[in-house]
Image (cartoon, rainbow, N blue to C red; front, top):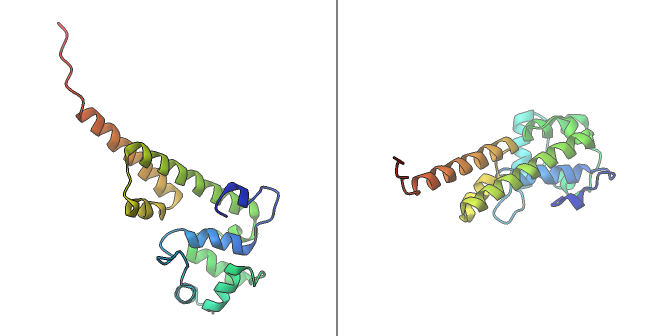
Length: 159
């Protein structure tokens, strides 16, 4: 689900694809980009009170388990801060994924325009919610505009 081609409008999204998108958000992935299923499962179980194992989460993410219970969907939704309908309604999932992709593009564009090249900064900002990405993009634009105005020579008053 890395691009628009990965989730055509007519195709159904799998739980695995929806989970993939959520796992890529925030700081849930380790340095090699693979989430720690054991740690995530323990966090989900602790937050929700539902039994969750790393193996079960791995199976859901890999598409080997395709029919989680509503209890597990509720636990996943609460943990990731999305409505349960994200997992049950493809239109809801697509809207949320599209919103995140658009916000990411806007943030990338504003960082490029401002000359932000620090990889660590890009990574930290990429972990933000769509609203956070838009706010960061606006702040970068405002800082760039302020800097451009400060660096302009003062205009001489006309008499």
